[in-house]
Length: 99
Image (tube, rainbow, N blue to C red; front, side, top):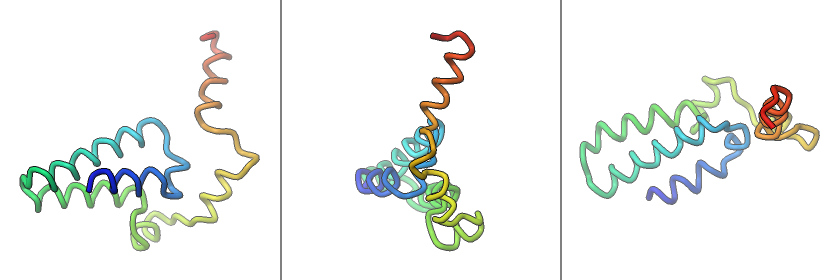
């Protein structure tokens, strides 16, 4: 189940906007999913924690409405003319004399 969770969230349209900390949060959440399904520890508590975390990514229609997130916004932000955020960070790093 944790692998399915990763596959779904790592390829969702929102993921195109994720930065490194978002990916780290996704990894942490995937570990909670694994713990819940494999070990069976505190299923109710873990399920509540997972639900709170995925809501921040706009997991459901209601979550996206609350966040005022639309796929038009996502498409515009990731259009062909937009530079990848990692490239932008590297360019800033170079300007600071890092490379």
